[in-house]
Image 1 (spheres, rainbow, N blue to C red):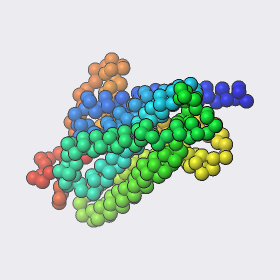
Image 2: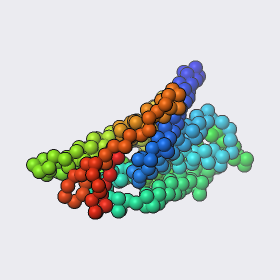
Image 3: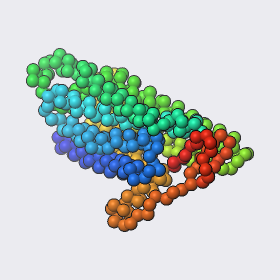
Image 4: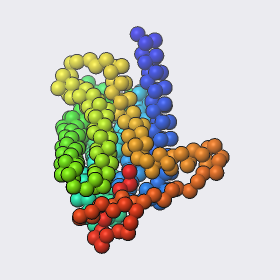
Amino acid sequence: MPGDVFAAKALYMGMEVVIAVSSVIGNVMVVWAVNINKSLRDTTFCFIVSLALADIAVGALVIPLAITISIGLQTHFYSCLLVACTVLVLTQSSILALLAIAIDRYLRVKIPTSYKRVVTPKRARIAVFVCWTVSFIIGLTPMLGWNNLHNLQRDNGSLGPDLIITCQFENVISMEYMVYFNFFGWVLPPLLFMLIIYSEIFYMIHKQLNKKVSCHTEPNKYYDKELKLAKSLALVLFLFAVSWLPLHIMNCITLFCPKYKKPMFLIYIAILLTHGNSAVNPIVYAFRIKKFRTAFQRIWKQYFCCKEAPPPESQPSERLDNNHYIAGTAAPPEPALEHNV
């Protein structure tokens, strides 16, 4: 019924606004925390900032564009296609940022003593640039011709010479592109790869903890903290799957079972889940990191409560060299790992 459709759209738009505001505020806090706290400016947090910027764009651009698409405005075909491609670019950049962070955490556990020699700030910036470049290539591919323009012109002449259409995602984006190229090529493989990475992280940490339990007690502190972070990564993997798989499964149903009519409320739920992933990333990645929490408290007290906030505490570093765990002492001759959690 029209009334039910209107109510469903109004509820969907209201929830999108809440997610957009939460995503922007949460991820701006992440970037702000890195800006005011020098101890957060290392390679790991370079990836986290890249993820935060992508999620800010999701809240500030993708969600408003998604709301615009849901309204069904009459626009030129390529204008609508550009809006849809912008959504694809920014959501893909978020996925690749999640993957980059997972690889970074893996290297911290796999090569703790040589991590800083391998993952340099320059290489981290190059990795961020590559993630964004790949995201633009993937997201803008429909603009190069892999879209529904030919189908619309062929099927009953539903598209006139002025190329004016009702702007909806499935009207302009090819399901073959979404399923075969986007999902099977650039969503499912990162998901499976992250599953392997996180499994390996847990295996290596438990192996190190079991190996050192009969020797020194101090090295366990480093791996205990890595284990806590690995649990956060496992949570991110779960949230990633829960957020993205429903929408892509529905795309597969659309492609392989075109006669099946998808309930509109299921489409709205699937879209909200994908956008909501950007809002929870600051909680999973930032709020579980102590230095981020401290920076957030400082921002809240100093800039929102107008109270004098103490400068960030300088805590002893936890370092791991080839033989010993060193707490609050000079660094060993070999480049060592500083743990930032």
